[in-house]
Length: 355
View (tube, rainbow, N blue to C red):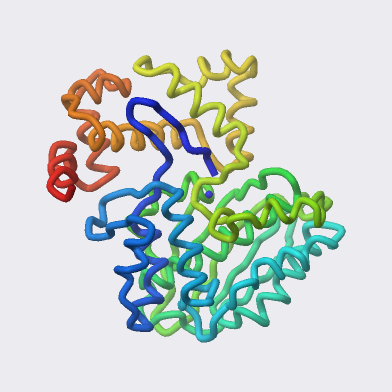
C-alpha cells in the first residue's frame, strides 16, 4: 500500500490515489445496474476525469460506504456477496494463531467459505514463500476488466495489510506477478506492493493466478496482536486497512518528510541517510523491507505536491516546478504528463472549469 497524509498549510498537500483504483471498485455497481452517482456525491467524488487523483481519505470513505450499501465487502464483484462483518471474523479467526503461517492458513480456509471465486494458498520452496491467489471461476470474460483487476489488487492488499498488522511490522513483498496486462494506474504499485511488480496476462479462456513472493522466514513470525488491539484496528475498517498507501511504513514516512522539508533543494539518498544518522545502505534496505524505494517516494511526493499547487494556487507553472526542485521546467512537464496524461496547464484549466 501506507504513507501518512502530508499536511501543508498553504496547499493542503495530501496523499492521493489513482482513479483506476476507484473505477475498479465501482465495477460491481455497473454489473448490478446501480447508479453510483448518489454514493459518489456522498463522499464528494467526481470520476469523470480518469486522469485525476483523489485524496486517500475519500477513497477509504467510498470503500466503506460501498460495503455498507451493498452489504458486501466484495463490492458486488463475485458470484456471492461477502457480507459485512466478514473481515472482522477473518481477523478474529487469525488472532489466536501461533505464527503467521498458521494465520494465513486460517485465512485461506475462511475465504474458501465466503469468497469461493478466488482460492488463497501459501507455498514454500528453497527459502522463498509465495502467496498465491487463483481464480476458481473467471471473474470476467475480459482479463483486463477493471473489476477483475481490482479484485486481485484488493485481496492481495487485504491479506498483506492484515499480515503486517498481525506480525506487528512491515512485511516486504519481493515481487508480485499480476494476471493481467499493465493497467494505466500501475505506477502506484511501487508504493502499494513492490517495485518488482510484473504483469503476465491470463490466456484466453483460462483462469488467472497472482503470485506474491517473500522471504519464507516471515512465516515463522509470532502473532503479536490480541483482542485488546483488535478494536482499534477495526475502527474504520476495512476501508482504512486497505487504503493504498500503508501507514505502517516508518522509514517511508521519515524519508518523505525529510524530502519535503528540503525543497526546493534536491537531495539524494546519501544526504537523507546522513540526516537520519544511518548509512545509505541501511536506508535502502529498510525502504526495501517496507516495499518501497527512495526514487518512488521522491516521485510520489513531487506528484502530490504538484497536483495540490496547480489546483489550490494560481502560482505560475515555472514557479511550481522550481519549488519542487526541478531546475528545468521541461523536465517537470514531462514528469507531469507521465503522472496524469496531460500537461500542467491543461490539468489546471480542466480543474478550474469543473469548479
